[in-house]
Image (tube, rainbow, N blue to C red; front, top):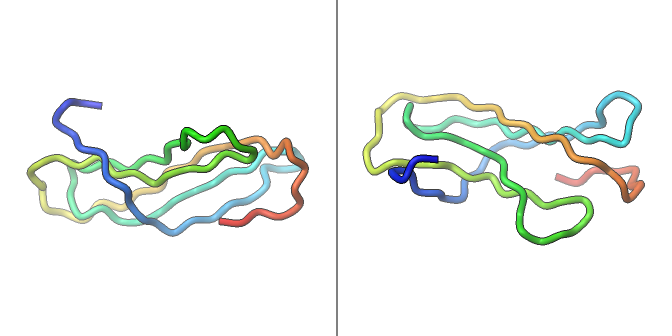
Length: 88
């Protein structure tokens, strides 16, 4: 990331689903950013827990290039705990 960006917590619509017949789970966040020069990203939280926790973060600049920008970001994680349900 550039030094001109500031990281802020964001919000999105989330969905999670099993990846085929494996112990992998794909978490996807979708939404709309208000500026073309903003970026959205899912970042793993510092706590070392299973399954991992994620933050939806937006990288924003001091100025806004006004235009709506849809986003969709995904992460894949392992369900090593053997849970048979996913809460988002």
